[in-house]
Amino acid sequence: MDESPRWANEPFLYLTTIGRRTGRPHRIEIWFAAHHGRLYLLAGGRDRADWVRNLRANPRVTVELGGEVRVGVARVLEAGTAEDRLARALLVAKYSRIEGDLDEWGRTALPVVIELPASA
Image (cartoon, rainbow, N blue to C red; front, side, top):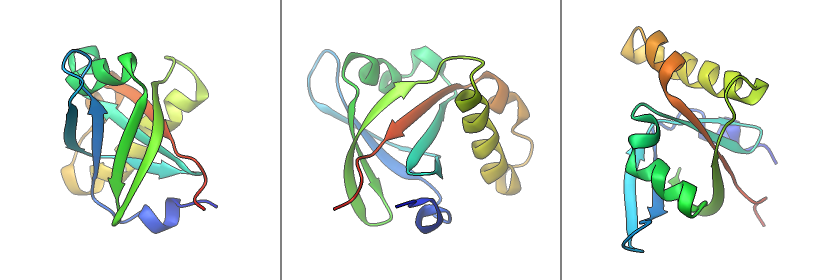
């Protein structure tokens, strides 16, 4: 089931990673785009962002979105791939309508995908 339409109008999601040193949950609010059951994020701080460092150490994440809590697996996308370009295009298109020029962010941020298991 493609959940993208259901989540299309949600402004952000809450992402919880597990602290790479502490083992404690680390929750952030972040922009996202949904496409064919996957969630795409862009890390403006790239590899310096704690949440990116955490998911590299433990890719299992929790997502709160649209009144649901789901567990997924996150990974940084490989630069220059079709999925990398898709993630950037989706996020810039979604948020530039309300935030203005996001071209630099779209070019320089680090793209991440979260794969969610199919809902029961």
